[in-house]
Length: 341
Image 1 (cartoon, rainbow, N blue to C red):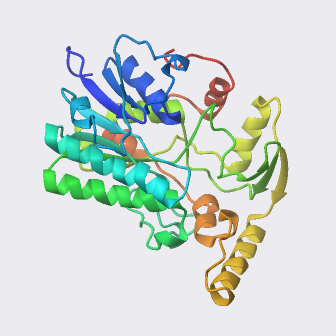
Image 2 (image 1 turned 45 degrees about the vertical axis):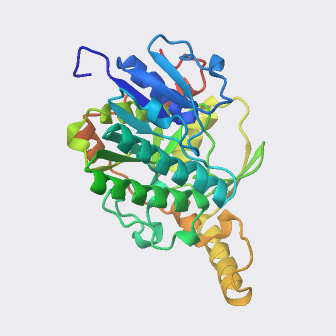
């Protein structure tokens, strides 16, 4: 931190997977943290729950009640809160309406600094040539209705934030992490499909994974709060030397004492079946069938298209270097270390 007096940052979604690590990183860097959590959250289970520099605020962001009061005296906001489950309306309320309420309260209290967390899901993967670089200037999804609800609501959220930035001349940075992994999320959708708790369908193997370890991601997010060069910018967050699917799975198998059974399927085969299912649905069924994501071409490409993922803008603008390599990240993920250690 640049100031001898601790600054206060407000973190939404503080009790979520990423939020727990962001709060811990902010506390380690000397910030006071006003942690917005859902009313029913149990902070006793989180290591920083009783930290002297932490002030929990129990709010439902789908309502504007209490938000302006929570923003009093803060130097900036880290906005993580989003809903990843449920139907479109659940996600719209928990992501878009929640963001609208937050921005309205920021305008009322004249808090201008916002670090907003988006996602790689907003990119238009079918518009990017296989094997090329996905950067902050890559095209966004042009047909969001072909993608899942998460991508749709995050695209709307980004538009909302940029409109607010232009209207209010606020100091906004949008960060787009790739797939965030850590001990709460190790086997994930970029590897294939979970058939059961003990069985995975492994799709492909050679594609590079746009991943970032959760502690590396949290440190980058907190650095962004005072990174003046990042204001007005969009920044992708991925680790150095992103592994291929096979390399990552080999790392998991070295650490996981009870790994799931893996059934490998070639990427070309899944892509072909998905394309056929999509064609049948569109041409013969009028698009009325609700296909699983593994059979929707736009969603398949977003998960398995082989691309390259530079992180030079994040390093330059945030003055950030990923602390943990893949192997050290997996070591930590399979241990019981404290978040504040």
